[in-house]
Image (spheres, rainbow, N blue to C red):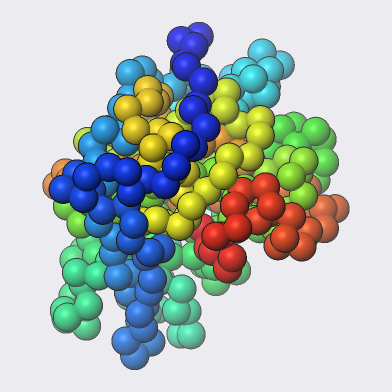
Length: 316
């Protein structure tokens, strides 16, 4: 079982109370620029190392078939499930091949790729391997690339998601690949995913994060705060739409390392983040979000009142 963690402190002020020599927290949300038909992330300042302080690792089950009533109860209480081997090496290689086909322009009209800022000057001359190492994320690919759709609609995965949303029919409403390339892959600050989605607060939103490569603390695996998924937390526009740095600085977290084919399933309100990838290793992952197919979206004002008024028009 996971060790108990101290309660998440409530924000006491904006994160500019820390010296600017430590980290610049007052930057605006990272923006994108478009050059021709390609989109580039403009980056964000490096974060304080003390924002990511794992003191333990996530509990794991071996496969999706090992998820039973006890594991479902664990999810309800802690906000996550970690599966050591959810997908086969063949399925992961097919997913990687699908991503490469999208990056190399094999699907005319597909433009939902966001490159890291450092790639802008040389992107046109890059081959598949080098280009893969310069992509921050891509999305909206599920209807374009069947190999990725096969992962998002995997029958065993959908069976578990259906149980987690109280036996309602799951609908995938967001698909992404988060590639966090070596050395330049930037942080995704601490946040709750539900803060980005205009669904009623009691909607059971389930996220899944699937490792295509080994993901560890060194290359920016997910870090989570188990048990803190039961209510919204105010977010701020700083390096991103995020939890206030002062509320998480030095807080113990739980690392969720995964081998290729491993998967983290998590509640939409579970606080999580991934630090900058300072390593020479790739950390590619797929991420999907599901909700019951009979849920209607709520006005943005509902989300903003719960998670903070600075979150207009944000994207995960």
